[in-house]
Length: 274
Image: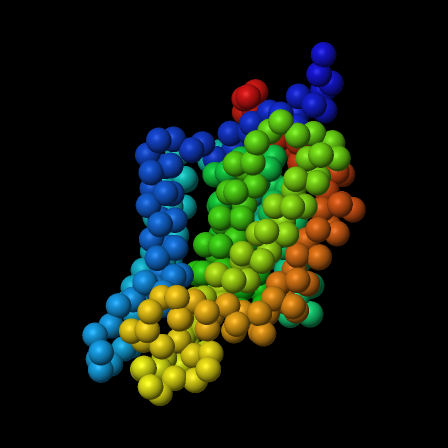
């Protein structure tokens, strides 16, 4: 027979229900967001044409996030779920303010992963958005990068909620650590991709810098430049620091926080076994 802890670990919480329509909206928003992140590799430019960043296209990202959050809200977030969401968003905002900007130390992702694991993918998505938005307000970090940070953090929380429920105990922590490492590097890579053309400028063939985004160049060539740019600027510092911080926090604090969150989930939301 399974113990109570095993049952809790295997239970799937419906804090923010993912109805079929909500899942479709989320999938469409994720595809749109991925295209906005990857536009430098997708854009095709006629030879000799001038290229400007697709600011109008990028400006749609906040609207996409608002539409998804409105859909989740319409699906039913009661007062107890909102209370849990508010507390975790505030805690995450404070944690991010304590660690962000210091050698890649990033304390926001471990709690986001644990909450997504316990409360489900819908809650994880919303928490990723609200946590980054709240922390940006606290640290005056509002800028064109914020919608991308919100979307990527939302994906991290959602992904944690979608992980299989078969693991418990140390195996569960190990899986979450692996997920945290992958998510940490993916966050850095995609954030770099969103800013790379603006950081080094957009060049045209024949006038490019060694690592610049070259409008109209083959995707493979631009991808090679981007990989070198990422390795030199963030992989060995920010991304690795984020991965180490997240892993250590999950190992040291993960078991206790999972237990606390699961107790809170039994009081605030409906649990479905499966």
